[in-house]
Length: 187
Image 1 (cartoon, rainbow, N blue to C red):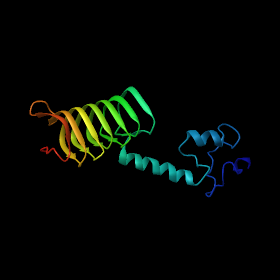
Image 2: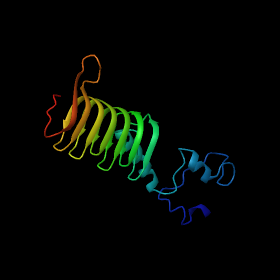
Image 3: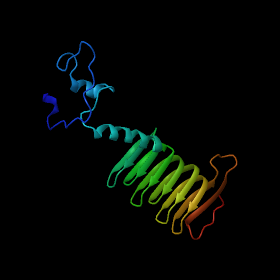
């Protein structure tokens, strides 16, 4: 069989029985059916394990977008993203579940988030429905609304800060250059 050369690897399992009337050369070839049919056997044994591992991880974290170091993403609206990891620079508007800004990362714009973890810089309008965590290297400036807040010693928070994510029962505080070790915020 010409298809079992070194390029395709060796099959560990026997070839499945073919449907009546089909042959390996006529109709649909085994190459065409492997890419388009879910019932075709893979050419390499490790491929199914890798294919099943990816959806399992995706189910845990959902849709994840990572903007890597030295990448600049500007002028976009990010939708249907469960987790945004910012290691570069992002100027955008987004409504998501989780945002994680790395130490070298920066986000500028507007975001409505369930959970925000800031190790880098956030500048703009930030609404955190559940929990805002600012680490020691993090700096958050702008108009900030939050449900709960944690600021590690050294973390910076400045701008118009509002407790609560709904405008009717929110209490507002304006700060200028507040740092985690100097500011106590009721959560």
